[in-house]
Image (cartoon, rainbow, N blue to C red; front, side):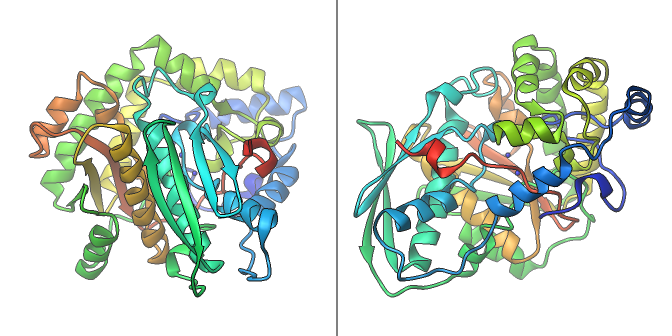
Length: 384
């Protein structure tokens, strides 16, 4: 799911291995030599990508003179900067004078990793929370509710004094940072603020910072990841959403561009082949062990019920958590494998002391360097 602007072909510092959502970096030397032999430059398209990313993630000062359709479009733009599974951007927006509706785009489902659309509706909740924060900065009170008849989020808008919050300011810097963190603990005050911001009456946030607890999470992540890696449908679906080069990423403006974790900008045909060679269970599990152990802690979001309305609220709570973390200089990334498989979910819940409940999201957090930002489709592409 997503990123600060950096020169994609001149990433500084150690290059981390990618998450299972991304192309594995183990063959950097092999790919580099192949590129040299084929005459391809890793810089190809990087400048265009960076220009598009800068435009996508721009932070315009709220202008209260914006009104009507122009204001609606601006609020939708901020909403689209939310995360979504595989960066599918599984939403559509309908904007009216005093309301915006967020609809599910079922053509962008991920049935292998998300068979019940659990992540899809959480993504709608993330977009709704961005919209709420952006509306307040533009002098509007946004009230979001789930419309069960339409499987949509209806957001009503009414005038209030404008307020630019730290969460709004963090929207254009928030990212799912899939690299290593520094392993240092966050303060008790920061942990408490994250827990408060990421909870609601219907969503519980479980914060785990003790090594014994994070090791239990790691054990569950490895077990679930191993099961997913053995599923050809999961691997095929993931591969379909990877963008191996800047030109393809700019063309689609969605999916998982491998360079967002510092990896080579390579031809699509080479990426397709290398994916099969290098995307292995062992390399992925080793990477998760390193990344979880470099994190300050794990956050588990648990909705009061397992239905679409609560999944939307879980998404809203997570997005507030992520925005608050960003404002504090804390990174985060999903490690959702244990909650994505129905077969592993009960074991994970039991290990977390949540027997009989359905954990919804699993997130690691800590401080570390930013990665390049992912892209988004244009407002025109998501308006209906």
